[in-house]
Structure formats: structure tokens, C-alpha cells
Image (cartoon, rainbow, N blue to C red):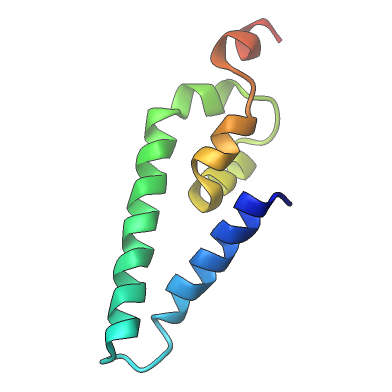
Length: 87
């Protein structure tokens, strides 16, 4: 796992912790907002790169999960759309 992917997993875990730590605290509120912002950003990335993801080799659900968790870090690992068409 690359450093970028490791950092994203840590960020997701810290943001998810906002749902279980003291509900009224500022840290928990910030973590929950960051969680929803990250999720929204990665869903938008998924929609923007849907055709590239669909054409990439491998399982569609695996690409969906990886895009939701890793976003552009995963998208950069996929072959360009023109290479995926020729494969």
C-alpha cells in the first residue's frame, strides 16, 4: 500500500471516529463533517470517472470500493481510457 493510500485509510478512520467519540465535542463535529465531505468528494470522483472505471480490467465492485476509499489515488492507477478501450 502506498503512502497516499495509507494516509487516506488513516483519514477515514479518524473521521469515522467522530461518530463514536463524545457526540457534542468540537473534534467529533469536525470529524463527522470531514467524513461527509470526503464521502461526497469521492462519490463525485466516481461519477466523473465512471466510464474509465467501467472500462478498467478487474471487478466493478472492487473499483467502486477503491474509488470511494482512495479517490483519485485509485483513479491514477487505472489505465487511461484510450488504453482500456484497446485492451
